[in-house]
Image (cartoon, rainbow over all chains, first blue to last red):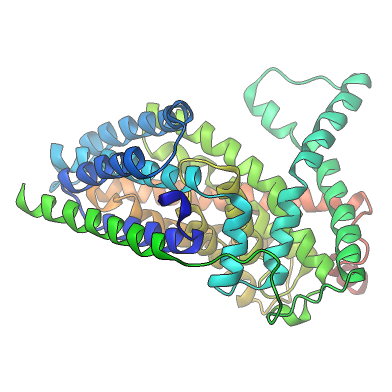
Length: 232
Length: 190
């Protein structure tokens, strides 16, 4: 069901939930919310759990960092509960984000932003162009690197120098991006793309029953976790 | 706002957003690993990296919106690539971009020099800190610690995004690929 939700509706619901979470400093609200999201994922969404754990892992580590920072550097009002709350919040946010990422097709997300949330077609199609260029940019990245290796450019050992050495790859990549942008814009205009708002869409993204059900589910979970925070 | 934009400028914005979106994601993971050791303050040093596309695109195109739109696009690309920060990155992108935009708007989009770029980096840092304060629950931390985080973030914004952005743009300008954009036209007059 979550997979069939309209991406814009899902996006708004998830953003609202996250902002609501920010006002709670008790450990129960984010914990219940986190478990609820995992349960929703289990019951109503198709998710690759292997990738899920892999992507959660860095944030689990981040949550640990949050936990001890709040314990050590917390203000006089904060307790063990607050420290736990902030770490659970990291987990709740990450699980919610993964719920979105795993159940939404990137291209449909942008199309939906344009069709439901009135994002300008100029911007929307430009983002899609950029997205389609990803594999091209990847090839170019390896090409530039190989060319530089052939000419004997060495990769520095120290991590700081390695970051500053990124410019040797970045500048040619960006120069290439400028040229690609020009050519693509030219091609789009040659095919009659004006970017006006009143256009027809080949792929229509709609809002349906799954959206009502999914939104209700998230709202219930949100209210439930707030109630858990007050009661426990 | 988009009426005065040429399509090639918008597509350029988007392609830069893709390149920097990938870099942003890379450093997000670096930040995460670091944050597990030294806590959320780990991100503060790096924060300037996440503002850089605003400064670069604005200095090339020099039109209202050229700071906030590419930053938001980069965030959208990060979400499309898939990561566990997800949709709220877009909100963060808008807010950071507005911070950088504010600095350029304050000069009425007339001055483009290192000082303004550093102000834009700092502006993005201030805006993003307010947002981070709320969502990250910094209210639970002691005032001195929050202040330290704030100062590091603003410095990072001014140095990495401001100076770093200026450096990258100058290098890009030297390649000659930016002919036909505002950056070459106005510099010729000045």
